[in-house]
Every structure is written in C-alpha cells, then in structure tokens.
Amino acid sequence: MDMLRGEQIAAADLAEWRKLAQGLHARYLVDDFGAGARFVAAVGEAGDELEHHPRVFMGPRHVDLKLITDDAIYRDDEGTEYVVEWPTQQDVDLARRITEIAGEQGLTADPASVSMVELGLDTGDSATIAPVWAALLTGNAEAQGHGSPGDEVRDATGRVPNLWFGDSPGEDATRQRFHVEVYVAPEVLEQRVAAAVAAGGTVVDDSDAPSLTVIADQDGNRGVICADMSAARKG
Image 1 (cartoon, helix red, strand yellow):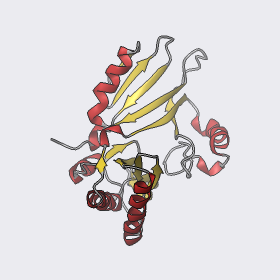
Image 2: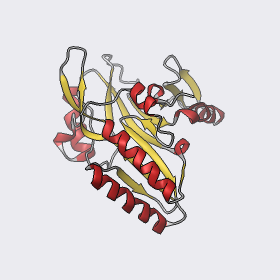
Image 3: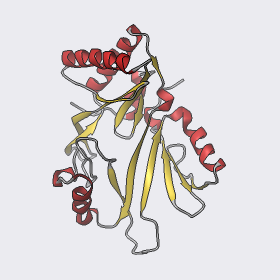
Image 4: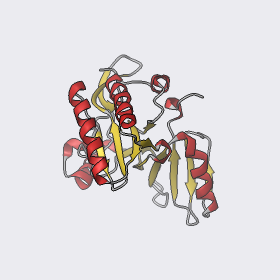
C-alpha cells in the first residue's frame, strides 16, 4: 500500500491525531487503568476487523496509540520502490474508527500532548558505522535500514529510539555529532521553543523553522524541536 504524503494526511482531517516522525499519534485520557484496558480491547476488535492494529502504550491515566504501516511503499523521483514504515490509508481508516470508539466510551483526546524522541548522529559514512549502532542499540543487524531506504537504525519492537544519520563529511572531532530530536504537535511548537529559551537555551538555527528549530543549552549542546507541518490540519 502506498505511503501517504503530508498533504494527504492533512486532508484526512484527523482532529485527534498528529503526525510525528514516521507515524500517526494520539493520546486518550482515561479515569483509571481498567478504563484504559477496556478502550484498548475495543480498539483491538476494530483492528481485527480491518486486519491492522496500532502500537499501544498504557499509563494509569492515559492510552497512547501509534499508527504506522510496516510495509508502506515509497517511490523516489526515479520511480524506484522502497518498503518503508509510514502511514497509509489503512492507518487513516483505523484512526477514524478509534476516534469513534473513544467517543462512544466518553474519552477525551489530548493531541497537543503527544511527543516522541529520536536520535541523530552526523557522519560522513553511515554505511560503515550503522552496523555498530544497530548491534549496540538493538542487538539485531536487521535493525539497520529497517523500514527506511537509508541506513537508519530502527528497533522493530520499539524498545529504543530510532537513530538516523545526518550528512557530515568533516572530521572535526570537537564538533557535537549526537543530538536528540523532539517531535511535538504543531500547535505546541512555539510554546516548546519558548520554554526552552526561557530555561536558558538559545535558538542557534531556525532557518528550517517552523519544521525544525535547533536549540543549544548553556554548554553548547544542541537538540532539535521538530513538527511535521506538511501533515498539519488546516484551519
């Protein structure tokens, strides 16, 4: 099934879901663990009907859901096909059904609170170093390039954050190479940047804002606050 582009996801108008990195994310608030379990059970039945299921993370007062297709098809400009992890139409269909279930159970969505973290490592030779990181992070060589057309390291079980590689041909050993990327909902992007600045951080690169804003702490360590603006709902 073909992957959906950002504008297609935006056009789906999924009010309770946000596109973060590769997937669609939602958080529903519950009164207690039992209510969360009942919600997850109903979501599981809906997934059985559609033959597709979300990834679920439960807390005592919330249920976090991630929708992604493990074998979505991406075509580059030359028409070459790659199998990637990305939302497809089946994720949109299931997201709508889950929204209906949440409404039937009287649950409230909290889309502004969804967030996820990925790791970035700048390198001039990702093919050489990726096997080391695949083994270190996941213990599985197949994690290199999993669900990605590149060397990105992704743990299929979701135990550790994804690691992607940025292009850095330089050999400056003093330069920071590792950084974290924090994906947030578009509506809280400005608030998150402002909070980091108020805490003593500095915006060192906003040339790709609002999608990417690079923040440095007082020691010069950098992180990136990200939002997928291409998939943001309009209006």
